[in-house]
Length: 81
Image (tube, rainbow, N blue to C red; front, top):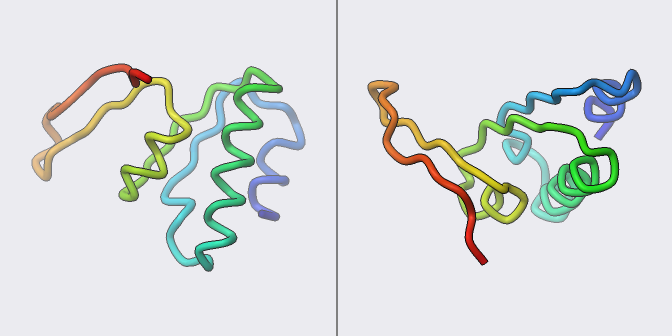
């Protein structure tokens, strides 16, 4: 949480997050993703999220790019409701 606060204090146009769900307790992970969604919706901040927890990432994403192990484009698209 502190690292997110430190990253957004200067109001960047782009926030890059690498595996924010790695390590914290599940309740903290839920809060991190709630903050990610809020940053985008209320501050119109673009967020590039690198995340293995696809379900959590899709919950807060408008579009996604999935890469294979050989770093080839595997899937690209927009979320549909």
